[in-house]
Amino acid sequence: WGLPLEEKTLPQYLKENGYKTHMIGKWHLGHFSMEYMPGARGFDTFYGYLTDTVKYFSHAYPDTFQGQSYYDMVRQDSSMKSFPLNFSVVDDINGVYTTNLFNDVADDILSAHDPSEPLFLYMSYQNVHE
Image (tube, rainbow, N blue to C red; front, top):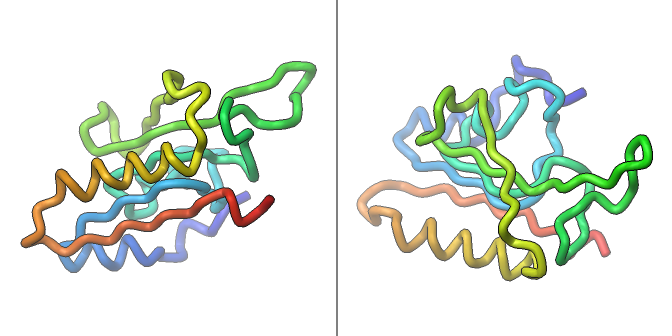
């Protein structure tokens, strides 16, 4: 499932108008196929999780699948090979509170951004759910 590919997203429109587009947090518009991932839907970068929730400090999905727990914190950016049809797992952040992690990533994006270029930074925190 996912937002139909024929539906254009806000970041896709903004990119057409010269914006740098970044997303941090919960992506919940589909991920069963790489064409549904944030990088393919208009974001230059994505840092976050793909499921409905993750644990605040371990970043693992709270339920098991076939008896296994799994980790859900990934990133996509245009420097990656085969972008946007690629992503990498972020696995060096165990113990970092998700809100602080997302804020740090946003700070890095804002610090590196050229203020002469328009910017769209979408942040989807998980805190509002619990």
